[in-house]
Length: 347
Ligand code: ADP
Ligand code: MG
Image 1: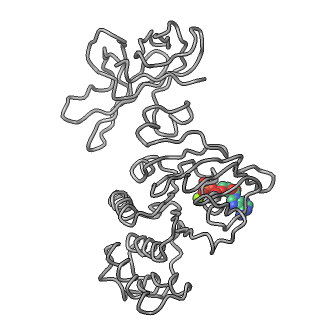
Image 2: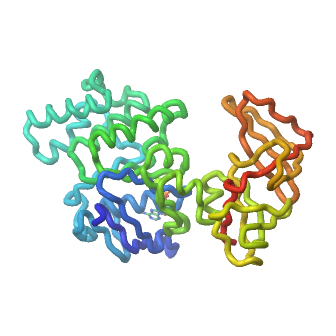
């Protein structure tokens, strides 16, 4: 039995359908991530799970029990808001203790739990600080400690790293899943950023236009996107209109390409899209899936160069490590593409 089951969730605002039959499960102890563009209804979905918003149809079940009509405070679910919503002019310890006070725990039990949460989030030295004087990263950790203190059975995190600058985000991307796994809580995080979703979660649930378009392990979704929208959203840009020629061959504007044995192509003649993973593009003469291209752009990103190549019918983008000598704009390249890096996507 899945820990959380969402079945056919619908929500409409001002005649505009936002959620149109969202269905997915989350297993106990799993860190799932709802990923989708801004405005795709992620916050609304979290609010429906938490019981702060109603669904027009369908069902929310936790541990096998239908909680669709259960008020928020009886669900055992905590939602950590995007802006953290800390209580201003209170100390860190008072903020963390808040939920425990509401639940009328004893003074001793509260003190012990607060100390435990301070240690878990590395805030031992901050207990008596006013939250208003804290940095963004520290505020984020207070919000996390406050959310975990009442031992929710399900923790929902709305864009937990959205308000932080880049360096801090990178660090918390590593820290946050460690903390969540340490307490073993089942969690759903929400983000519009695919790298954040990949780094934080065991499983990604991808939303578009009010529906779930793909779910799976981050590596799997990235490797085998279901369609061109998913590929583009994940930052995969090498897409070309293509047509199946033979059971193991496709034709794109820049050439005929051999696919891998397991490519599972549809009938010859079918039109669709060809995705080329950048790791399979080799900038040296080859014998299979060869191409000729012109370098149109080269940008330096510190740990890699990004190259843009013009081929017949489109552009190829790839990153190369700075150890290699990168070709310069204007150069002509003869390269080849590894068949295992090709994916057929439906039109
Ligand atoms: P996301 O978190 O993915 O960015 P939201 O769940 O915030 O998406 O909602 C997306 C859109 O739904 C909003 O841009 C808004 O147009 C509409 N919406 C959300 N909540 C309300 C509300 N309470 N009343 C009216 N419209 C709303
Ligand atoms: Mg949102």
